[in-house]
Length: 88
Ligand SMILES: [Zn+2]
Image: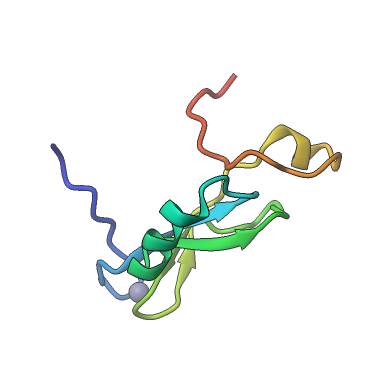
């Protein structure tokens, strides 16, 4: 198992959360990660420059969030959390 910890490029802190866009389908599971600061809710709308990570220590945002196809096309609600690895 390699390290899962991410480091903030700004402060070097390891209290880093990942932005989650779209509507999560398991809020109970998610709440634990929210409380732990592992997940930051980014809302349903993802724009071009939406960040991917958030530092809980210095509030620095960085990275580029993946954008789901529906959101890209400006279409219907984005119901899927963006966690795909396929790049097409
Ligand atoms: Zn930081």
